[in-house]
Image (cartoon, rainbow, N blue to C red; front, side, top):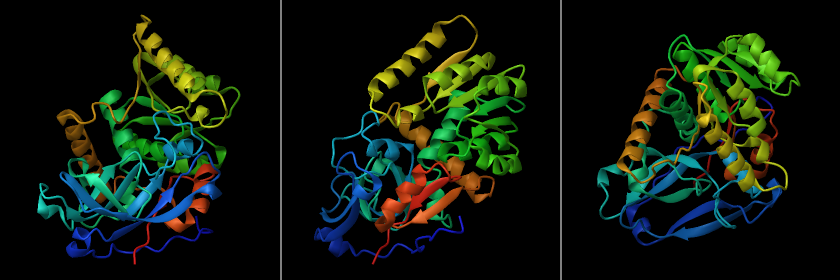
Length: 365
């Protein structure tokens, strides 16, 4: 993206514990006031309290723009909070202070966290038990691409589909935030990948070893069947009911369909809740059919708060960090913007022209 101006990469500045304890930490945050165009985001300053019991104060170094925030801007993300709120599904940053019952050795450590909201800010107060360690030497923006997107890709591929070397998979949106990671993980695992994307991204996908298909092809089902006449072992679908039907129909016996979003519901005025219910009902019906195939709807928050949930997050993110450190995963960052550039950042992320993820880099004094 050589035509874009990237926000400067600044190291996190130090925040003294005395200023934290006095409640003098000021966070700069992006507010989503309601259903607005990208120009309608509001930036404001707010004083944060000192960390309470079980909390840590994070100086944010990177947060991303994903499908979730694009849907929330339209008021079309199931379970989003009431307006106004601070978007930002995940973040990477440095712990600058902790509550009285939290391990003080966390201070100064770089961490990642799933937040669902609140990541688009210079500082964030988070539950300390949700923090995931980021190894020394890892670029914060690169680590950010592997939080919600990376964990989602890893868990869908290895925990839901349980993919095996030599198998064939179909990835819808292979150029997107989740898709770019899923493709790399699958290829590393020795899996053949067929990926749908806009033709402008096909050369990039081919260079990685993906067999690309135009997702707008009116004969998409037939084209996919030509590439996989015996079917695929798993399909990862982020589009919705119609696409899920095509994907399920392409599965081999014993294959798995993993639905992870309803991108087709992002725009429009009909009920997104009804679309979600319809897709879930479709998934349930597929599992009732006696055809030797199965379907599931992936939810990264499944089991939230349990020891099993935290263990999965820690194990899977650690695996991703190892692959990143070894250069096996190469993060696809479309562009980096400051919080002040949120309008341009959101417009680019929603343009469907970029390969990879748009990342916000908060600037600190």
